[in-house]
Length: 104
Image 1 (cartoon, helix red, strand yellow):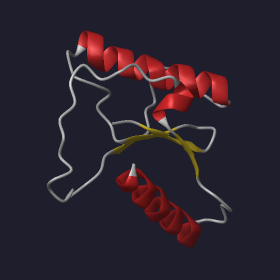
Image 2 (tube, rainbow, N blue to C red):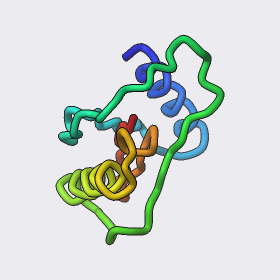
Image 3 (cartoon, rainbow, N blue to C red):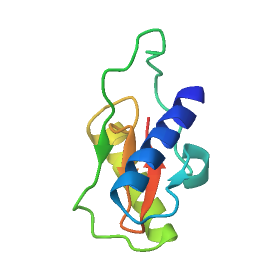
């Protein structure tokens, strides 16, 4: 959780310096109803060298909270079911409603 807060504040600082946004809205996994990961790979003992943010063109666009949450759930389902991954493949996803969704 500490790393998520750090990343949130880092993203907030980046967005504030590059745009007129007053605040970055971060939607955590519980808020968007994430499925549990199949397996958790704990990498907290190593410093992270990068994070992955994702903005997808497919499925169709989302412009409100409900449709963006459904889109993030669809992406997680695709990654876990069709791709056989342990969880959603991205650290963060950016919705067209301006919100950032916590991935893995």
